[in-house]
Length: 88
Image (cartoon, rainbow, N blue to C red; front, side, top):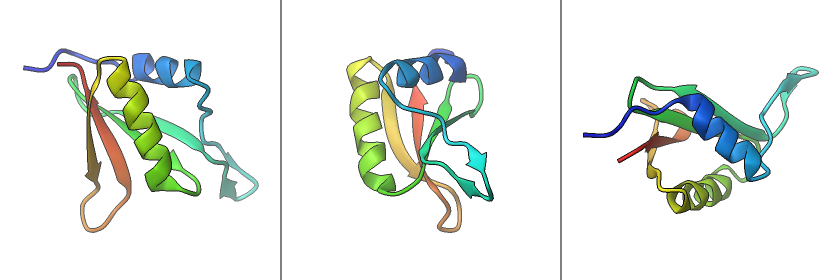
């Protein structure tokens, strides 16, 4: 069973890797990562901005190097791509 994980820990790691948060300014989103808690044992990571697939691959590699388990998923009905992050 996966260990408990906090969105804040994943967020801190990604910021330490040089990723910036996406922000809504002037009616549009600035590129960056967005992290959301998805229960006690999972965190979702989104990329807001261009080259979504390529950026998620980079983030996947960084998280796996740190020991996280990462599964690419997509929201229901053709929604946003995201990464489901857990701690084995």
